[in-house]
Image (cartoon, rainbow, N blue to C red; front, side, top):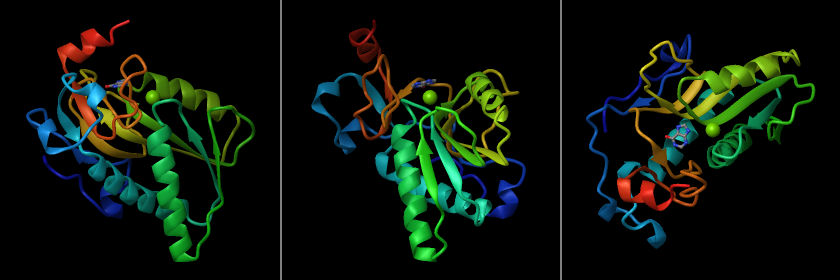
Length: 207
Ligand code: HPA
Ligand code: MG
């Protein structure tokens, strides 16, 4: 895979770092993995296999744990695309906190706002960042003590001024991706790997 993001506290200072997938990354052949038969012929290649998503998420959970210290948090899952990442991230935080005897209370909510103390927003993908800025403005009205954003993916768009989340798993090329709860017209959420859809798939599920 393309270059790794830096690791450690120094690399994280001033915003998140993630695995960078370069524009010329060819991905993995679909023949090397399993995936639902109803998507045969609809995909170009595997961009990020499921196992790598899960392993990277475990590390994000560790980084988040370190940063939030003993504070309790409310995890705000941005539906629908965020649900897989959110579920796996919360599971990893729970496991890490159980093993470290530093138990962090986590309440999970789904963008329904009340008064919150410490909020971790969990998103699937950040593109231009416009959606995230609107959401952040809304949540800031409730004056939480802390707001952090974790996104599984950040897309390199033509707008380099794009918003950067505090934590992210992978920076990806400007491609339309599906799988791991990311959809194309509500399809492909049941695909485990993050894949690039092909023209046949786009035509088949076009609305
Ligand atoms: N896939 C699915 N949903 C999205 C994407 C994408 O690449 N970008 C923004 N929303
Ligand atoms: Mg989303």
